[in-house]
Image (cartoon, rainbow, N blue to C red; front, top):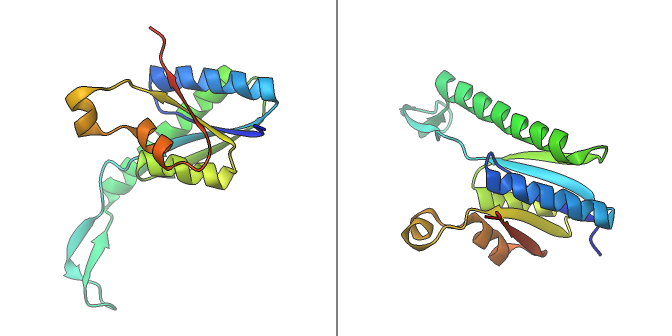
Length: 156
């Protein structure tokens, strides 16, 4: 029985198509919907040249520019989620998540937190060298998820 559906979204036509599909399934099963957008930090904290005064080891530092960039990414994520809710949810209540880190692992973590019965994800239909270099988020989610995953290709 499908009671909770987690829909993974980003700012692409592929994700929008998957979201539409996921919301349609949720309506048919009267299932709760969770939306997740993963923010992959554009910058990682740099090792400082100074030592931490307590531990005596180089410290990890996040400067003002990195904090501003993370804020921008967080705002973009919230806009993607809000836009998706307005476009597809209607009067359905939606739980939403913004996770930070690796996309596929973040989706899997959210599915566990949300206790999803199904994950819906779009695919960019990469192949060949592009897939080898970039990896496939959908493939990773399919291989590591503990619940069924519906991979929605974009229609031509």
